[in-house]
Length: 99
Image 1: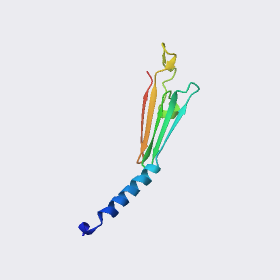
Image 2: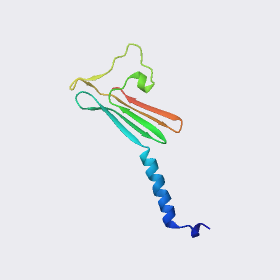
Image 3: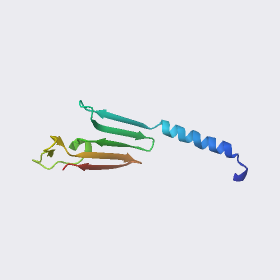
Image 4: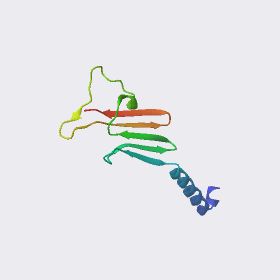
């Protein structure tokens, strides 16, 4: 029964589905005053990803050890950390680098 289906119709339907899914995706970047990228947000129908170059404890959901301070790169005067947060299919994953 599947052999009698029109392959052109099937390819049209698959192409239309791909276009609809791609149209629902977005990428947003936020830059600081020096025009350096600080955050990137990627959203799809299946989930989202958030990337930060200078994370804080609230954005990652991690608790901070009492009395700790952020590490700064002595050569550049910048923080050398970053975080990636992903949310897909009801699950969340957060990764942070602070050293």
